[in-house]
Image (tube, rainbow, N blue to C red; front, top):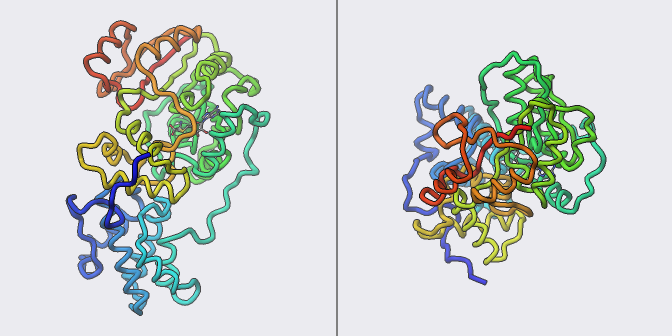
Length: 404
Ligand SMILES: C[S@@+](CC[C@H](N)C(=O)[O-])C[C@H]1O[C@@H](n2cnc3c(N)ncnc32)[C@H](O)[C@@H]1O
């Protein structure tokens, strides 16, 4: 087992481009710049080590000032509110130093507004109740792997998202299934763009579905059914679909082929299934990060996730695992867990993808080539050769469409 790399400080390394957000500078910003800063904090997710460092330093500075008696005033409260939203939305992933922990221990809720707000920059206070009881369900989850995957996503619903993507509008009145819809970002975006379509999302995690349900209500989207259940038992839904999409879900099943076959069983004649499955060569950084986690024997707890993040920040720039800091998933607990701590995942090469397709009884219609924005016909031989010369050509996932 390797030992953890030495790390003197918490958080990202000092040798990066700095964003300066200290209270002295920030409180004297013009009205316009002030508005932009607060809007950014309220609407952005972390996504970069520079932002993590800057926001972490500002939070630590404000904590020290508030603990030292800095008086409540409008700009301070305004900034603290925005900062608290930012920290909550990134699941409080920014590391906390021993000094901050000590200062926080001396604060309590209900004494003054600035104190309440700075505490909310470090931990959740009265978390919103998720509407789990309202969720429809298929028969109970029984498969061992599905149960383990469910447990993981019940603890960390994924992905956390804020903005609903705007997709091209469609007037088709079709039935669509999103298998492994997670917290609903994709299904809600297509349902909003296709008001005549009927959309069913199925997932193992009730917490993720509840997140999706909350977002559906927030956006007034009503042509979506979110159902708790296992893809293995999708036939119980009792309807068939024109289109099925399973992005990033089937590779988390013990036997992905049985998942694809179950989906094929609810596909209407002439329908299509879009799949996105992990690419072994497109995920070299993630696989190196997973190997590091396994070598260091780090558990999938909040502390463990934080420990692995610190270990990765301490790696030299040319270490293969260091590349994970470029992925937005690195900047939240749920994202890190999904990317580096998964209980079950399959990573494919091109020949393995074609073996899966051949065994599924379906036919390949098209393959999405990265950067081309459209799906094109491809052969096993052509893509195998491409993978030989350009191993990560597909990016992190192979995306392709099957037909019956
Ligand atoms: C990485 S997340 C992807 C979520 C979503 N498709 C997206 O792209 O944002 C994988 C999701 O697949 C779900 N999943 C995995 N195996 C499943 C199964 N056997 N049945 C239903 N859902 C499953 C998980 O619960 C999880 O929410």
